[in-house]
Every structure is written in structure tokens, then in C-alpha cells.
Image (tube, rainbow, N blue to C red; front, top):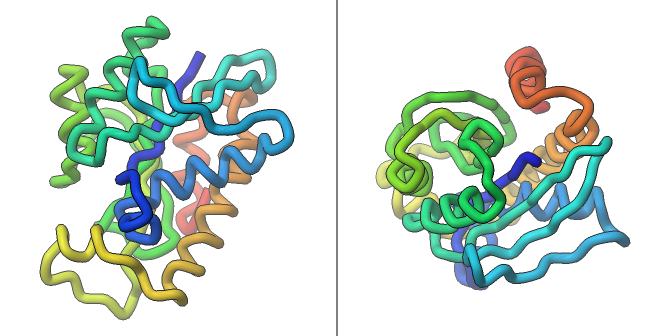
Length: 196
């Protein structure tokens, strides 16, 4: 089994914020499996989840409902329950170091100050897991305060651009999942710079 964790903050207030890019990506992946699956809340690890099988591989898709800064609690509980190793997971999150619409995948790298990622580092005691970083900074934006930027809604135009790029990347990721290993998918992401 592999597990995919889209990070974000629960609640309508945060729905269209840059910090919820991970939720947006998870929802886009779920759409790829529509008709067969729907989100259910798993109290055991405080997350909305979908479980499916792709190319004979079990996949857990999860959106932790713990709020961003405590994402590690949900991720660690799920890994413990399913007896997974950190290198069996992909954490999907916003990244203010990437331009809007750009996607990167990496393994065993620092958090660059992302509080959700830092929470997972602390909870798992390692950073040896995959991360799918989604760029959220519009070309016209200058970020003076990261916390304010990531927790306030994007304007309609930027949100539409983010949604289109996430939909495209999620489609590509879904096509590769189960066909290629996570390490191979990572190489694809780095070959195609603008999206998966």
C-alpha cells in the first residue's frame, strides 16, 4: 500500500486559500475515481479518506482534518494503523518557493519552513518520505508575510489558474500511480518542469 496525504485546513474559511492546495490536489485525484468512491471520515487518524486499488496496488488517499500545523498527528496515526513506512507515503502541500502552477516532487528534503511538513517530520522522526510541492505564488505577487498569504483566499483568477494546474497534475499522477514506483514518478515530475 501507498498513502497520499493532501494537506490543508478544514472549514469553509480556508477553502480557497493557497494553504489548501494539498486538499485541492486530493479532491482532483478523488475525481479520477468518481463513481466508485467517496470521502469518509476516519476518526482513528482524524482524516477524510478514500481507499482504492490501482493496478493491483492498494492506495489510501487522505485529507488530515487536524489543521495544518498538526498534520503529523494524522499522518503518524495512519502509518501506524496500516503498518506503513515513511517511504510509502507522498505528502502533497503548497509551496511559496514555487510559482503558481508549478509542481515538484522530492524525497528526504528540508521543510523550507512549511509548518505542516515540520509537524510530520516531528511526528515520524524522519524526513525520508516523498513530497509533492504545488507552487502557489502568482507571478504578480510579492509576499511580505507568508502566514498571511497562505491563509487568505486567492483572487478568482489565481484560484482558477491553480485549479487548472492541479487538475492536470492530478490526472498525470493518477495515470502513473501503480504503474511506476514513487521514485520513478519523482523523476517524471523533475523532467517536466511546469506540471507532472
